[in-house]
Length: 400
Ligand SMILES: [Mg+2]
Image (cartoon, rainbow, N blue to C red):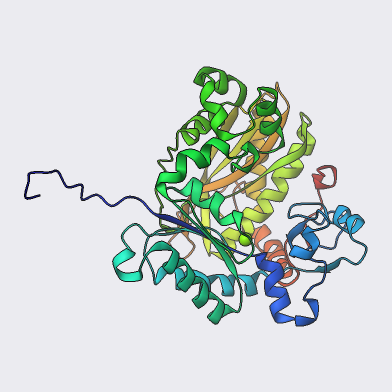
């Protein structure tokens, strides 16, 4: 300063990603110590149940979340299956998120057991990142008796990868000066969003590490992988512009899934939509909200993505109406290519207590009353026995 030098006052970004270790399974072990050390999964026991979480013991058998339950059972003869208790997990999650928010208000919760925290300006109050991470882990352990893993890096993308590196109960730092080397040798399948298909395409192109991406022109990557190709280039350059975005009040509720096998079968796709509509409706009713706009999203096998929306005359929280509207959108969409992912969501949300404009000439089409009783019963059962424990009869038997 005295010699006229320029002082850069901007604080370099320091982003933390925190992820609870085998969260649902760990909570179950905590509440029932007899389960400790067992090959344990949380999930539905039904024929179509899937693994929601697997203990580290189960993971040793290659069991992982989203795996169909019958496959998990094949892999481990002594598998213990515990039905999910979402309310309990949510209560623990609130404790964890509360402890994180004591460090910084810039917390973006991305799932029940995962959050990004911008700790760029926290050094003076909480010490260097490694100390801050150690202290936070200790506090979470003291309050919840559970462990988590923390990654710290200059951006969200790298922080997320870092938190996974020393799991469970680990802390991993990627200091800014080591980022270029880290990216250069990072195996491409470690990049979030690179699934089986993208990995296949990238391997075919000779890309094994994220650093290899830079040799390819953007147009090539875009042609092969769509928007995701562009994102990979940015990531390979160490650029991740997405800031940590603290939660705002709910603006949308949605669900989607990547299909096991790509399909053009609209009946199958309708089945998926029905299931998502049940879930979205359930979450709306849990939050005491209604929605006016229904959107479906389709990603094709070539990664091209489309959305179609419809706005209702009257807001609804009835799964049946949400499904019917989503179904109409799908019926009208001309499918020319196989579908790899289907999802649906609702927006234009209102709190139920807000006065609802009644339709002047009630056609009956959007009236939710006949369904509210059905939904009420289904919600009660779902809350008690977990997701997927009951569904309305319909097309979904064909869906899986
Ligand atoms: Mg986790």
